[in-house]
Length: 271
Ligand SMILES: Nc1ncnc2c1ncn2[C@@H]1O[C@H](COP(=O)(O)OP(=O)(O)OP(=O)(O)O)[C@@H](O)[C@H]1O
Picture (tube, helix red, strand yellow):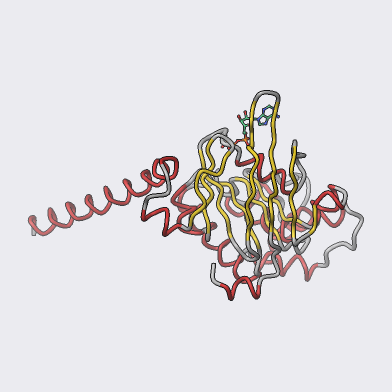
């Protein structure tokens, strides 16, 4: 992230201070002290059970920490009640779970409705649909009339309805086919930049993290084993946990380049 982004971001800074979560003998997240600058997109990667979701959910108080605290925009998140906090933070997760008996417009507007706030206008809904690149006439459709990728776009629109500065995303595109997944990840990155958001995104896909994030936190056993830019991770030297994860997309890319070279050589030999 460049400093211009930090200057124009409306997304907040995040500070984790001595934050930890224990379940009996299990350390889900070991005490960590780390900051996120406004406007940054951080990807959380790491093996299953390494603590990614727990860290994400301690940020909007879906999980309460065992110790330490979280500051968002300089404010301790325990100074407001958990529901108020959550309404101000966008949250997108895998299989977004739209309400099947509600229209797309009603699904997008569910947050303000449940909070007893002023309902979203048709104009608001149209703007949100446009933001996530869906036709505005989808407002009156039912969820089962949309593809999985389109439903996930609605999930992003629903998360943006509360005008959050911070977006938390837990495997947001994990259930989609690879082509749709890559498209949505790149479109989300553009949206993040245009809106000046701060985003924390859990992903199992290291290639996705390398392509869209400003910083990547590699989690292992509840610790942040590496905190690096995509370029630093690709260059190597960020530790064995990071190397293991980067090796997968790097190896695939090298094999594909090799396979393409061989295919081109065969084509030339045949002609
Ligand atoms: N409610 C719970 N009770 C006991 N242990 C838990 C609970 N929730 C999580 N854990 C444990 O905490 C650790 C971290 O879990 P977490 O869900 O944060 O991992 P993760 O990196 O998000 O995993 P995944 O990639 O599989 O979703 C795991 O060892 C998990 O078994």
